[in-house]
Image 1 (cartoon, one colour):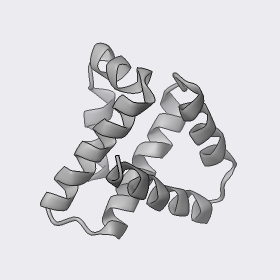
Image 2 (cartoon, one colour):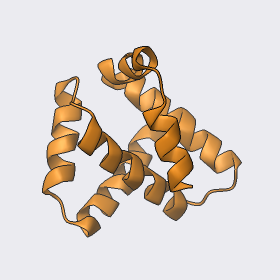
Image 3 (cartoon, helix red, strand yellow):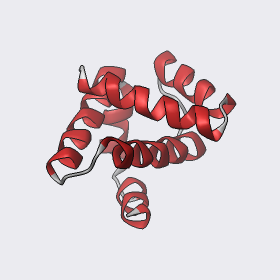
Length: 99
């Protein structure tokens, strides 16, 4: 699963990636869509949180924040312990479900 996610994210075209990351509301909408697809596939909250953790780690290591909301998320992510990051992943899931 991790290999597939990493491949999908790293092979995403720069234009599409920029479109998603440029605006925080677009970013939330994109994540909300992916969460819905995961739920349709039968993923539970813990599986979704682990996937969110993987994506957040990837973004933190490979992408520069495009706006102040992403900058704040990256700062929180990078300063948190693994346990805190896991809690933040659950909070991100909750946030995008309300989007």
